Length: 128
Image 1: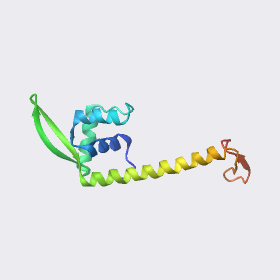
Image 2: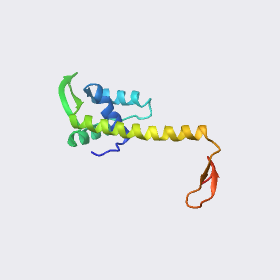
Image 3: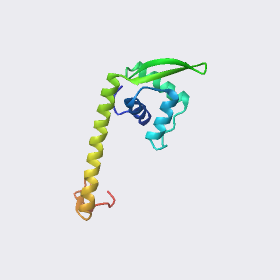
């Protein structure tokens, strides 16, 4: 699976980086990690877990019976860890670039810039 990862996938891998978890534990952890922005339904989660297992990013850690029901725990595989690490670094670079641009804009708000392809100066924040 290539980066960039979709946000739910990124959050599932992030949750599993801490420890193996079962499905409903992952639903709660993704909710916590995203401050409630990403809410996974069981069908969506288990479909994603199947794809992640098929892609080699997640492994089944163990299974147990709880209250007569099978509970399957998943863990981040070494390939999943490498993918999560690469995606985290990609996002970190993007955030650093955006932060730098915003910092420069804040310290030089009236710096004229050239409108794309026109050779005409424009003020920062003005229409392109």
